[in-house]
Length: 196
Image 1 (spheres, rainbow, N blue to C red):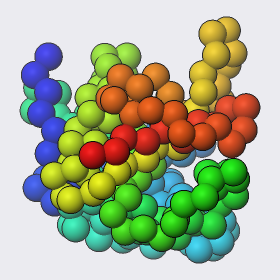
Image 2: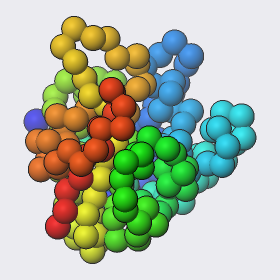
Image 3: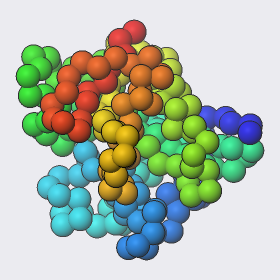
């Protein structure tokens, strides 16, 4: 499997759009196709206070700015990771969970965040999320970040995770990419961080 990962500003919009794929309310791409990795960016609650057209426009702008990476498998668009300065995610800065018990300047522009992974149907189960996490950390470092964080899901053997919830990435994905746990705000969420 030949994998290459590039910044979103270097790929045609059609390739990024293919990763998110057509969605339907019962399909595995429904949540990603509708959210478009704007969960921590849109004001209010994404479905009520913004339209799909607005979220698509926001993702296009995000991609044009190079704030995200697209993975290709054998020259086919197969995955995406959202990564950019943490301050670009206004809802993340005000969400209680990542900050409870932490004493840190959440508005520090030199700390980046990995907020979303999407792997296209047909390419799952091949370890692509692990490669995207590694690339996201390297991209943040290359862009001058002093650290990068992820807000991962803690998975447990035998426990079912509702589809769509794992878009933030599993703890082990970040561990394999060299992140360390800095905070566990709830039984299921773990803040992972890599300092440069």
